Length: 231
Image (cartoon, rainbow, N blue to C red; front, side, top):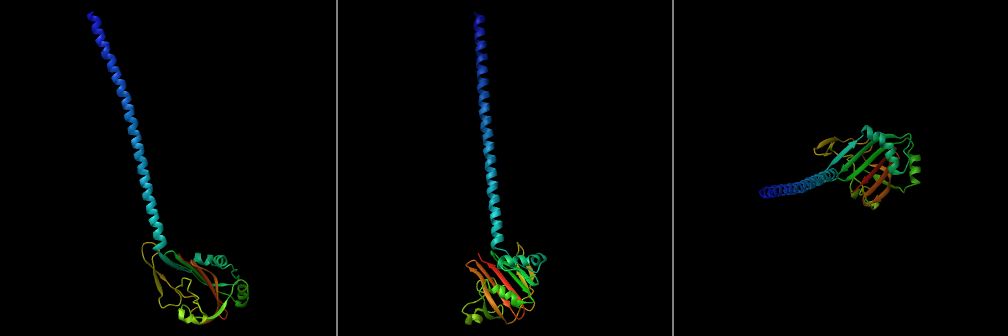
């Protein structure tokens, strides 16, 4: 009897211990699963936070470039090569094959930007006749940059809807800020451009955020084209 009692207690303890170990094993699995899920969620949260920080930094960068920078580039090799194509695309007129490029520049102040192209042709009459078939021109005396008062007799300011290039001014340099640091750019006036001249003027396009003009100086054989975009 004693043997049976002893065996019963012994095996009872063994079964109980085995049961406890199983419970601890399953509990360990549950804790491990919870710990793994927690690490996974933490990783996801970190990735989301990093993504939001990156988006904020890129947004700040693009806003800075769009609104707080300025630059003026004139007569670079790249701009000279692009001049005929730009003129044709923006003016909807063919760039004369015999044209001599005098000047091309890009100006931007924050989100506002403009392109200026000045070229010379030997036969201004033929070019003028071609332009007259597409646009309406007005005869006027031009003394750029001038003021609005100089054009009161015409009933409008021909340059009110464009970004005026730094032509014909006393300064020979201009301060700009292409990125974070200020730089100084040299200003070069187009040859034989400054001073009062008789010309014909056309507003090729005009909207709240767009101004496109062209002026032909027949005597000098000069054509000035300006394309300005406003924000």
